[in-house]
Length: 229
Image 1 (cartoon, rainbow, N blue to C red):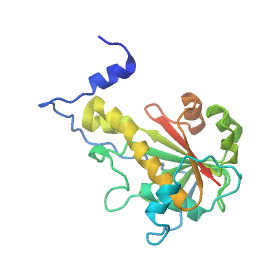
Image 2 (tube, rainbow, N blue to C red; image 1 turned 120 degrees about the vertical axis):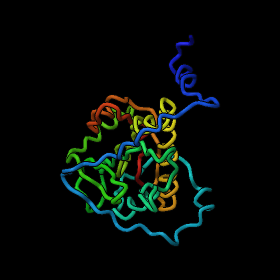
Image 3 (cartoon, rainbow, N blue to C red; image 1 turned 90 degrees about the horizontal axis):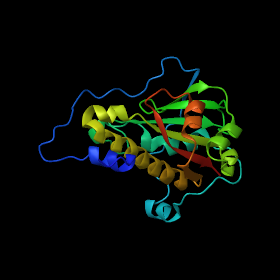
Image 4 (tube, rainbow, N blue to C red; image 1 turned 60 degrees about the vertical axis):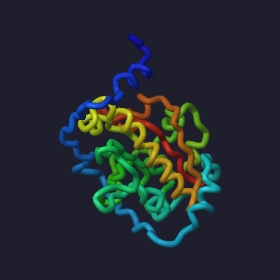
């Protein structure tokens, strides 16, 4: 048997005609009962804005340079593709399992206390989990990426693959990695349309990121999106 972990994963998650999926009840998304503070984000604009093709021509991973703040309205618009609407969200999720969670490390977010927040997609709301923002620790966790300290906010996309596993078995771990990719691309598109810089950092020290967010077992950081100017 091939013991290479990547090859073994793909071999074990193949589907063949006649295979049955587990089809268990999908777990609910994360809910924080008692956040330190809840921030209702401004209502996102649903009309107008830059034409999509013009935005796509400018779309590229770009590290924040200026170290300036962003507004709540800009963050709201950037997160809008992830918000709940019409019974779903703005990106596909296999089996509607939604293994994705998003956290906002607010460094320079206007009219908002610095801290770590959970993004509640149903309410389009930030739930404050911590008042501490240690950008030096975040820079170290992201392998000394200089642009971290120039960022107005870090958006951390995590996966809870057990939600997808409940529907698809081991194959659900594939979907737990695909979904952050869908979400990050949409947030980058929205941020670019606002004239913001957005840079996805996929290489980091996993355990350091987990500790900074106090993630429970079974929830894994996938990508950290640097957002700023």
